[in-house]
Image (tube, rainbow, N blue to C red; front, side, top):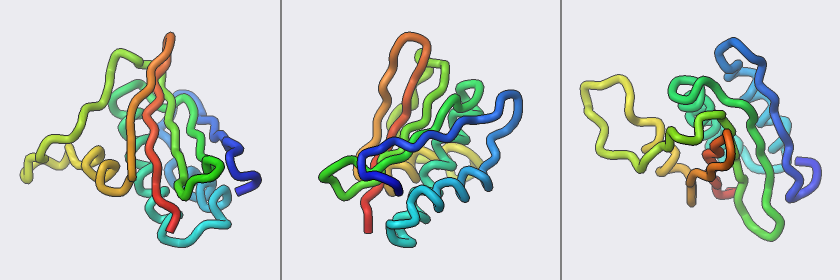
Length: 131
C-alpha cells in the first residue's frame, strides 16, 4: 500500500449491486505489500461488510482501507447513509438459516470492530491483523 497511514478509498457505482470481484482486486492491489493471509482475510471481511451495507442499509457509499501508522493491522471502513441502523454483536446463528453469519465472521477475523455514526452516515470498521 502506498504510504502507511494513508487511506485509500474505493467509490461505489450507484444503483447496482457492489462489484465484489472488482473490490477484491482493488484490495489485493492496495495490500500488495502485506502477506497472502492478511489479504485473504481482508477480502473476506470486506465483502461481508460491503454486502451487509448493500442488503441492510441501501448500499455502501465508500470503502476505505489503510495501515494505521505504528500498528500491525489493516483497517477497513465501510460507509453507508443509514446511521439509525446499527449492526449488533452476533448471536448464535440459526443453523437452518442461510443468513446470520456475516458479523460472526467479522468478529472472528478481526482484532476489533465497531460502528461510528455522524450526521447522515454510518461507518462500520474492522481491523485485521497483518500476518
